[in-house]
Amino acid sequence: MSDFFKQLIAQISAVWQKLSLQQKIITSALVGFTVFGLMGLLVWSHSTGSSAESGYRVLYSNLDIEEASSITQALDQSNFRYRVEADGRTIMVPARQVYEARMSLAGKGLPARRGLGYEIFDQNNFGMTDFVQKINSRRALEGEIQRTIEGLTEVQEARVHIVIPENTIFLDSKNDAKASIVIRNSHGRTLSREQIRGITHLVSSSVDGLTPQNISLVDFQGKLLSNPFAHDDVALASSTNMELQQTVERYLESKSNQMLTAILGPSKAYVKVAADLDFDRVERSIESFDPESRVIRSEERVEENTKNAPDGDHNRERSLTNYEINRTLESVVQEVGNVRRLSISVAVDGRYQTGQEGEMLYVERSVEELQNIEDIVKNAVGYDLARGDQIAVSGLQFDNELLRTQRQDMRTREEWEFRITIAKYVLGFIIALLLILFLRYLANTLAEAMNPPVPAFERFGLQDEVVPEVAEDVKSRTELLERVEIMTREEPVNISAIIKDWLSEPKTSKRKK
Image 1 (cartoon, rainbow, N blue to C red):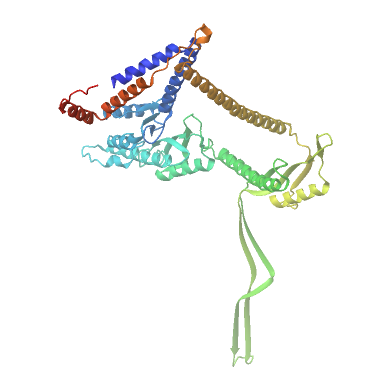
Image 2 (cartoon, rainbow, N blue to C red):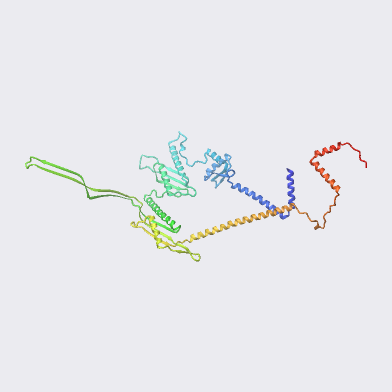
């Protein structure tokens, strides 16, 4: 094997010595470029590879720094390879060891469960005082509520703090329970007003004596999410009324805009509604009588017969009739939020036509079209003339300069990206073609270096050497010797047998001439 390598090195050295300086430079550059390219490809594939067998996968992400430190220490103790990314908040391990590492960490209680629930009472401690028992009970309640809140998709992390006052026999000195909740939203998600209200009612229903007004909901940036007017009844009522009014207006605007978008197209009409709602809560009791409708309620008749009286016998009769008049008793409760009046404003864009020179010309909509649009909006919002509703429909030319500019920029960007894509393909084709030509040139150069042409002697004033002719007997003797040599190499056993036969033959006398 060593002889083979020696011959290979000798041949490579011989070829290298036959190359010119330019050919040596080109060959060295090509070999170096190939080697460095392969090394870069291997490094890139190793750093970005995430296959199921050789890459790394996420073990845990979005970890606290303390929790990530505990997990890395446990991985070091268990001899697991890992990588830390995302500023120490993400830990990655080899793909084939993900589940094994998770089970190993779970056996050590990592990552630590956020919020300790009622499992705190799994271990009995008979020496526990009443104060410690109360503290553990509150911790368990806070942990269970925290887990429930973290179950929401929009919530990534939550902290719950509950203040439960001591029981007292004096009602005047009794304090209300209070709670504060800190929430970290998931990436790209926010809590809606309904979800915030749902969380506050969930917590108030979980703690005895806790009302939604005594719950403060804050995010990790310190922004108050719950209603800031919870302790002011007047401000709370005003805030609730304003929210209800905005909800009604958005609902009516959405209905109208959806219909106009389906008819006229997007961004061709806008509807705004101003709703005047009645927030007065009225309770009325109405009692009415109908004198025309009399009904006999009771009737009494008394008859008296007198006989043998000084003035003779006689009969007396008395009757008493009681009538009842029809009476109606009504109790009317008028709830808040009834619509007093609506004011609707509708702006409609016209049509656009292409002129003779390619410019866009604005064309106003006809009166009939505007009237049809007005009727559609009236039916959509529940227009009532008797209630005093007002509507105004105007045909205007919208300022679409920004929209046209954005469309032109988008069109220019698409054309530029298309040109860049075409240029990339053309450049790649040219590079591939140049590489093929270069390899062809290199192959021809190597072939010429390994097989140099035989120099012509005429250029140096020399004549080819004349080989003299050989006699026929010499040729025959030479051919016979070559055949004997070939047979000796191929069939040595037969040749040795022939030689033995020659040696064993008896000597014969020479013939006389």
